[in-house]
Image (cartoon, rainbow, N blue to C red; front, side, top):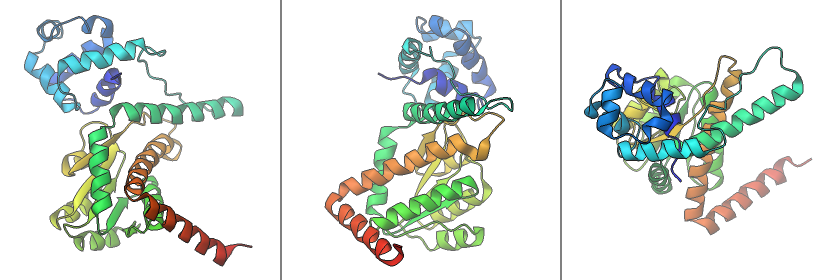
Length: 284
């Protein structure tokens, strides 16, 4: 069942336009009432126009107000009632509490990402990467670690991939891409300057561009051909971008598994071959 309506609105509030804010806030304050309202009734009660409501739904990746109501209704039927479940890490937490909170936050991030991640966009990303001559992954900081993980995965199934950490090398690599290649930008905020620069260069070179960012409007999402959304409602105690990292890794794994499934026998053979080679050289 479609869900994630309230989650989309909470995330969208971070970048929402003033003309739509009153609608979003009214929905969050009165979710049970909203699912019984027409678009005209909601417009009147939130002091907005029907056009603003339609625009807000479109900006959140929904087909319209009816889909939003269906998703909100599903949220309200869930055990949490659509409420946030992210657990703040506090300095007074003992180790068992900390263990539970970190685990719960990872589960939350994965589950909520699944609600906002568009299956069609994932399919498009899989097909683009499968056809690619070369794949460049761009990330900075914690997102660079995700890029390196992606590079390692795709090299193991014989897909040429790079994940340069140096910003100059990222640009150098991006401008050498062609229309046969794919560039993947990874940035939770969607505003990392180095990643945006590399993706712009890759786009100018003709490569298919993919962005893995938090849900909502941001510069990277507006720049790429394919936007893959994640959820990581990290609070103030943002231990090395833990939740965003887990969500990004999951999206990379989805693409990897999708590509591997396209040529299953070849992928399995390559995985076996690379594993055996590493073991032969470094087994103690």
